[in-house]
Every structure is written in structure tokens, then in C-alpha cells.
Amino acid sequence: MNTLDWTLLAIPFAAGLLVLATHVVLGIDVLRRGIIFIDLAIAQVAGLGVVAASLTDLDALLHGFGPPGLGAQLAAALAAGAGALLLTWCERRWPDIQEALIGLVFVFAAAAGILLLARHPHGGEHLRDLLAGQLLWVSWQQLLPVAVLYLGVLALWFGPAQRWPRLGFYLLFAVTVTASVQLVGVLLVFASLIAPAVATRALDGGRRVVSGYLVGAAAYAAGLGLSLYADLPAGATVVSCLCLAAFAGLLLFKRRSGALY
Image (cartoon, rainbow, N blue to C red; front, side):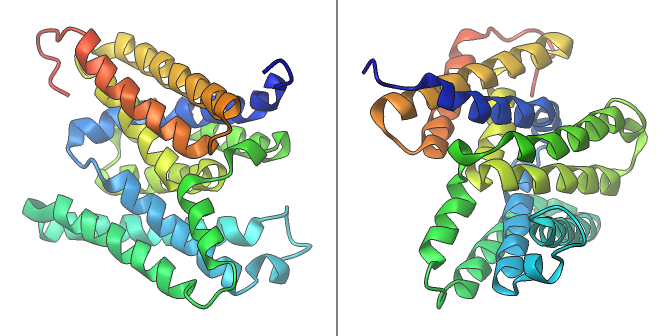
């Protein structure tokens, strides 16, 4: 095993830390609001936008108007924004079944993606990449614009976004998830949001946020290391480690008074 090149994990690990930078705080709020599957639904809707962009060669149509992948990013952002608007409207009209409607949005987007790719020669590969991502193939060039975007998201989140109505939260969430899906895939987006929040639910305040970052970073490091050592798919391995970290946190962290979520 001395031939393993551990430097190959530097960029994927940096991508994981970048995703966690926004997803830990957003995930804690998602858990508090009780809308657990909103991230999965919006991520899947954003993924549907990516599929549509691929089938229509939107990147080729927009070639020369911006960076590579602009078409997929625009399609994902528009789809996620539309999903956020739909969920906001549903919550106002049918608040008692909001979680069920979020689930329906998710399965519809997933089924629509399968239908769109049914006759595509590489449809199975596209669906796999959409779910599990291509974490090992992320480049530094991909991380830079996402880092800039996330800085803006965090500035809004810890500033004026705290006073925004629910629609503002959904739209900010949609923008964040759109970028994340492009980097790590739908499953890792969900796990990065929920696992650290679940693991640290017995804590509160800044201690919870810091612990969430540490739990997430440890899971990414363990998952990436195991995937390289055992030659396993990186995305699925990290997702598994994040899920195990969530259960470990529930067992290790003692509940404090008032820490319900």
C-alpha cells in the first residue's frame, strides 16, 4: 500500500470543507425548522436542470459568453429557484403537509430525470454522477467561483438573511445547493447538510457549529482515505462515513438543557 498517492485527496478534501462551510449552518436551521428533506428535494430539482442542460447542449449554445459549464449552472440555478418558489407557495397553502409535498417534489424530479435520460446512450452514467458526484475529479478551478459564492452566502446568512421571510431562506438555500450539486452530487449534498446537524443536536450556539464542522471534516477525511485505500467510490464512501458520524454524535454528545434540534 506504499504506492498510494495520498496527495490525490487534497482537492477533494478541500471541496468537502468548502461544501461544509455553508452546509453545516444551513443544515442546523433545516433541522430546527423540521423541513428535513428540503435540501434533498431542491438538490434533485437542481440536478434535473443539469440533465436538461446536457440534453439541450446549453453549454455549447452559451460557449464564449462565460466560463465552461455556464449553461449547466444557469439551468440548475433556474430549476432550483423554481423549486424554492414552488415549495414556498405550497407551505403557505398547505402548511400541515409541507414535508409530504417536499417528498413529492423530490420523487418527481428524480423520476423526470430518469425519463429524460431513458434513451440517452450514457444515461446510467449521468444518473450515477448526479447522485454520487465525481468528487475525485474536482479541480481547483472549479472551487474558486464556488468559494466566492459561498462567502456571499455566509455574509448574507449571518447578516440580513436572519430577518428574511421563508422565501428568502428557500432562495438562498437553492443558490447554495445549486453550486454544491455540481461539485459533490445529490447524496453528498444531503449528507453534508443533515449529518453534522444530527450529530451535534445535543449542543447549541457556537459550540454546535464548530463541532458540526469538525464532525463533517472528520467524516470527509475518513471517507476519502478509505475510498483510496480500498479502491471504493469516493462519494458513496464519504456519504456512508457522514451517516455513521451522525449516529456516533448522537451517542457521544450529551444533551444539554433546551437543545431540542
